[in-house]
Length: 122
Image (cartoon, rainbow, N blue to C red; front, side):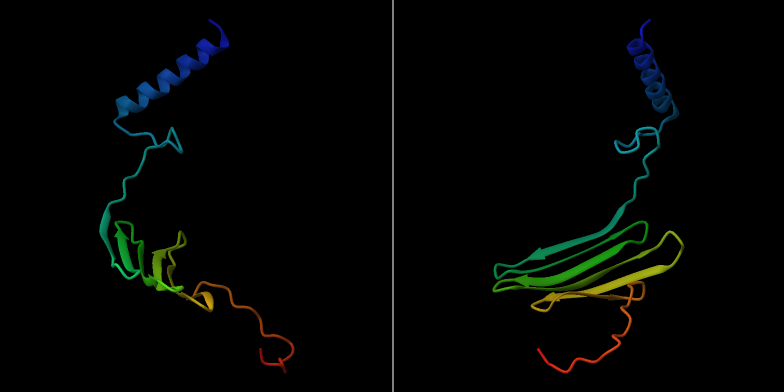
């Protein structure tokens, strides 16, 4: 038996072992069982004038919502929340308009104060 035959035999043994165990392999991690997380909420709407909204929630505590319009420039606001791997609740809110994307939340870094003050207003 050559090297290709040995490798093929090893793959067949692993696949048969997974199927016999009743687990389902994920394409990203072929040897680890896949965990299925249910979608608890999924609401979407859109109107003829460029307005939209969506929100969803999952069984592992991830929530996301957004409301906005996309006519004559995009204006959106919304946020998301989840629990970090360390157990810290994370909640981010944002506004995206002519001033750019402006997120806020307790886990985002804050820039230090400038050592000088501006004299010219732009």
